[in-house]
Image 1 (cartoon, helix red, strand yellow):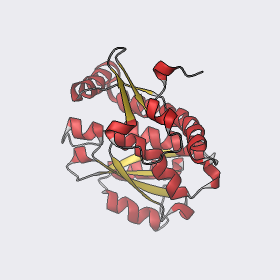
Image 2 (cartoon, one colour; image 1 turned 180 degrees about the vertical axis):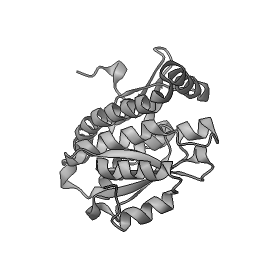
Image 3 (tube, rainbow, N blue to C red; image 1 turned 60 degrees about the vertical axis):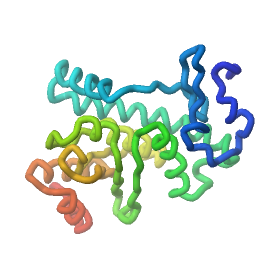
Length: 226
């Protein structure tokens, strides 16, 4: 049972309040205990850019090129667990299940807390969903913003997060790859979400020098690796 010390007071008082994503509403700071709770009673930790740099550089030092896969796996497990948690708090706040609501409303409701927590804004392009894939644009990635222009995709934890969450939501195994990144000199990050065959194709084309726009055109034309 949630106790008074680990329950968001405003959330408990107004459990059906929806416009709670301002910094002051969303977070509750307890200076005496040194804790930060969000609206959904989850503990949060404030970190600096140095923490992100240290985490990524530390992984690269320990596991080398496998650091990208490690970050993806961390994001994947995070996304899967968060999907279950989201289903619970969505039902509590809105009084209906996640499969009883508009899809775009559902996705925006899931991502808004991440925006409040500093993970950036997103746009979901559902135009190719019937073909089995979709694109996600991410603005102001916490990872890419911190690392700067390093000439390669760096938002592997986001790719894993998207893959894990959507896999649990649609009950179908999905994968994700970043095909454009702020750390490559672009203005925003772009992800491809879909089956493993399309992700493998996109990865191969990227290694061959294809841009995000090239990959979009090929996928929409029905191309994939044989």
